[in-house]
Length: 172
Image (cartoon, rainbow, N blue to C red; front, side, top):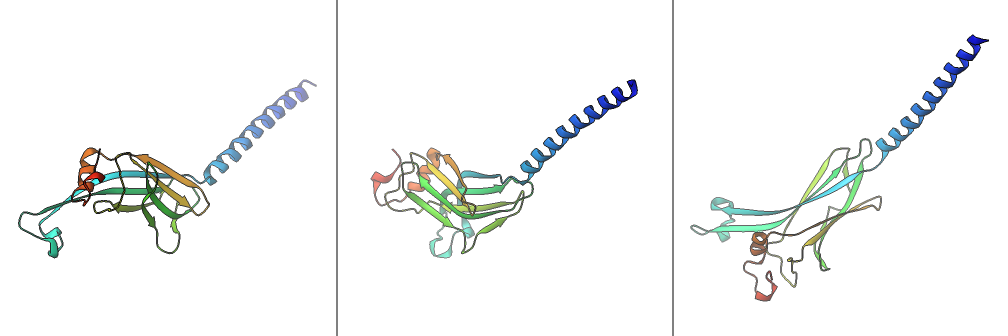
Protein backbone atom coordinates (compact mmCIF):
# COMPACT_ATOMS: atom_id res chain seq x y z
CA UNK A 1 0.00 0.00 0.00
CA UNK A 2 2.79 2.39 0.88
CA UNK A 3 4.53 1.55 -2.38
CA UNK A 4 1.42 2.38 -4.42
CA UNK A 5 1.02 5.75 -2.60
CA UNK A 6 4.65 6.63 -3.34
CA UNK A 7 4.22 5.51 -6.97
CA UNK A 8 1.06 7.63 -7.31
CA UNK A 9 2.93 10.64 -5.88
CA UNK A 10 5.79 10.16 -8.32
CA UNK A 11 3.30 9.76 -11.19
CA UNK A 12 1.51 12.97 -10.14
CA UNK A 13 4.81 14.83 -9.91
CA UNK A 14 5.76 13.55 -13.41
CA UNK A 15 2.37 14.56 -14.86
CA UNK A 16 2.64 18.09 -13.42
CA UNK A 17 6.18 18.57 -14.75
CA UNK A 18 5.18 17.12 -18.12
CA UNK A 19 2.26 19.58 -18.37
CA UNK A 20 4.58 22.48 -17.48
CA UNK A 21 7.16 21.38 -20.06
CA UNK A 22 4.48 21.05 -22.75
CA UNK A 23 3.08 24.51 -21.93
CA UNK A 24 6.59 26.02 -22.06
CA UNK A 25 7.34 24.23 -25.38
CA UNK A 26 4.13 25.54 -26.96
CA UNK A 27 4.93 29.06 -25.76
CA UNK A 28 8.48 28.78 -27.14
CA UNK A 29 7.23 27.45 -30.49
CA UNK A 30 4.79 30.37 -30.78
CA UNK A 31 7.59 32.80 -29.92
CA UNK A 32 9.89 31.28 -32.57
CA UNK A 33 7.19 31.49 -35.24
CA UNK A 34 6.18 35.06 -34.38
CA UNK A 35 7.04 37.71 -36.94
CA UNK A 36 9.17 40.45 -35.42
CA UNK A 37 10.64 43.29 -37.44
CA UNK A 38 12.30 46.59 -36.57
CA UNK A 39 12.65 49.85 -38.49
CA UNK A 40 15.78 51.87 -37.72
CA UNK A 41 16.10 55.40 -39.14
CA UNK A 42 19.37 57.31 -39.07
CA UNK A 43 19.79 60.86 -40.40
CA UNK A 44 23.12 61.33 -42.21
CA UNK A 45 25.32 64.11 -43.60
CA UNK A 46 27.85 63.34 -46.33
CA UNK A 47 30.67 65.56 -47.59
CA UNK A 48 31.98 64.92 -51.10
CA UNK A 49 34.99 66.59 -52.69
CA UNK A 50 37.57 66.09 -55.44
CA UNK A 51 37.07 63.27 -57.92
CA UNK A 52 33.90 62.06 -56.17
CA UNK A 53 31.96 65.07 -57.51
CA UNK A 54 30.40 64.47 -60.95
CA UNK A 55 32.52 66.08 -63.74
CA UNK A 56 29.83 68.58 -64.76
CA UNK A 57 29.84 70.11 -61.24
CA UNK A 58 33.57 69.80 -60.49
CA UNK A 59 35.52 72.96 -59.68
CA UNK A 60 38.82 73.55 -57.85
CA UNK A 61 38.27 73.44 -54.11
CA UNK A 62 34.56 72.64 -54.49
CA UNK A 63 32.98 70.65 -51.67
CA UNK A 64 29.44 69.28 -51.84
CA UNK A 65 27.41 68.30 -48.83
CA UNK A 66 24.26 66.25 -48.78
CA UNK A 67 21.90 65.08 -46.07
CA UNK A 68 19.23 62.46 -45.88
CA UNK A 69 17.92 59.40 -44.12
CA UNK A 70 19.08 55.80 -43.97
CA UNK A 71 16.21 53.39 -43.36
CA UNK A 72 17.03 49.88 -42.19
CA UNK A 73 14.41 47.16 -41.81
CA UNK A 74 15.62 44.19 -39.75
CA UNK A 75 13.81 40.85 -39.61
CA UNK A 76 14.21 39.86 -35.95
CA UNK A 77 12.16 36.68 -36.35
CA UNK A 78 13.81 33.39 -35.52
CA UNK A 79 12.16 31.27 -38.21
CA UNK A 80 9.84 33.34 -40.42
CA UNK A 81 10.77 35.32 -43.49
CA UNK A 82 9.01 38.66 -44.00
CA UNK A 83 8.10 40.51 -47.17
CA UNK A 84 8.81 44.25 -47.17
CA UNK A 85 6.38 46.03 -49.45
CA UNK A 86 7.10 49.75 -49.03
CA UNK A 87 9.17 52.34 -47.18
CA UNK A 88 7.86 55.88 -46.84
CA UNK A 89 8.98 59.05 -45.07
CA UNK A 90 6.59 61.80 -44.02
CA UNK A 91 7.18 65.17 -42.44
CA UNK A 92 5.84 65.16 -38.90
CA UNK A 93 3.41 68.00 -39.59
CA UNK A 94 1.81 65.87 -42.32
CA UNK A 95 2.50 65.22 -45.98
CA UNK A 96 4.88 62.92 -47.79
CA UNK A 97 8.50 63.95 -48.37
CA UNK A 98 9.71 60.77 -49.96
CA UNK A 99 8.24 57.44 -50.87
CA UNK A 100 10.69 54.64 -51.53
CA UNK A 101 8.82 51.96 -53.41
CA UNK A 102 11.10 48.96 -53.51
CA UNK A 103 11.22 47.58 -57.04
CA UNK A 104 8.08 46.06 -58.53
CA UNK A 105 7.94 43.15 -56.13
CA UNK A 106 8.24 42.67 -52.39
CA UNK A 107 11.69 42.37 -50.83
CA UNK A 108 12.02 39.07 -48.95
CA UNK A 109 14.01 39.20 -45.70
CA UNK A 110 15.11 35.94 -44.14
CA UNK A 111 15.45 35.72 -40.32
CA UNK A 112 18.05 38.18 -38.99
CA UNK A 113 18.50 39.72 -42.45
CA UNK A 114 18.34 43.47 -43.05
CA UNK A 115 17.41 45.74 -45.94
CA UNK A 116 18.96 49.22 -46.24
CA UNK A 117 17.55 52.13 -48.27
CA UNK A 118 18.72 55.74 -48.42
CA UNK A 119 16.71 58.86 -49.16
CA UNK A 120 18.75 61.93 -50.15
CA UNK A 121 16.87 65.08 -49.11
CA UNK A 122 19.46 67.68 -50.12
CA UNK A 123 17.78 68.82 -53.32
CA UNK A 124 14.25 68.27 -52.05
CA UNK A 125 12.20 71.16 -53.43
CA UNK A 126 8.71 72.39 -52.68
CA UNK A 127 6.96 73.33 -49.48
CA UNK A 128 8.57 70.67 -47.30
CA UNK A 129 9.65 71.85 -43.89
CA UNK A 130 11.65 69.38 -41.86
CA UNK A 131 12.19 71.35 -38.64
CA UNK A 132 9.24 69.57 -36.99
CA UNK A 133 10.83 66.17 -37.67
CA UNK A 134 9.83 63.15 -39.71
CA UNK A 135 7.99 59.85 -39.48
CA UNK A 136 9.31 56.84 -41.38
CA UNK A 137 7.06 53.86 -42.02
CA UNK A 138 7.63 50.37 -43.39
CA UNK A 139 4.71 48.32 -44.66
CA UNK A 140 5.03 44.56 -44.70
CA UNK A 141 3.12 42.34 -47.12
CA UNK A 142 1.24 40.93 -44.11
CA UNK A 143 -0.31 44.39 -43.61
CA UNK A 144 1.76 45.17 -40.52
CA UNK A 145 3.18 48.71 -40.24
CA UNK A 146 6.42 49.71 -38.54
CA UNK A 147 6.89 53.35 -37.58
CA UNK A 148 9.85 55.41 -36.39
CA UNK A 149 9.88 59.12 -35.44
CA UNK A 150 12.92 61.38 -35.54
CA UNK A 151 14.30 64.88 -35.96
CA UNK A 152 17.18 66.34 -37.94
CA UNK A 153 20.12 68.08 -36.30
CA UNK A 154 20.53 71.80 -36.98
CA UNK A 155 23.54 71.01 -39.18
CA UNK A 156 21.53 68.55 -41.29
CA UNK A 157 18.73 71.09 -41.70
CA UNK A 158 21.25 73.69 -42.92
CA UNK A 159 22.61 71.21 -45.51
CA UNK A 160 19.09 70.29 -46.67
CA UNK A 161 18.06 73.93 -47.09
CA UNK A 162 21.30 75.14 -48.75
CA UNK A 163 20.58 76.72 -52.11
CA UNK A 164 16.81 76.67 -51.78
CA UNK A 165 15.09 79.21 -54.01
CA UNK A 166 12.63 80.31 -51.30
CA UNK A 167 14.25 81.59 -48.10
CA UNK A 168 11.00 81.01 -46.16
CA UNK A 169 11.40 77.26 -46.47
CA UNK A 170 14.49 77.09 -44.26
CA UNK A 171 14.70 76.08 -40.64
CA UNK A 172 12.92 78.32 -38.12
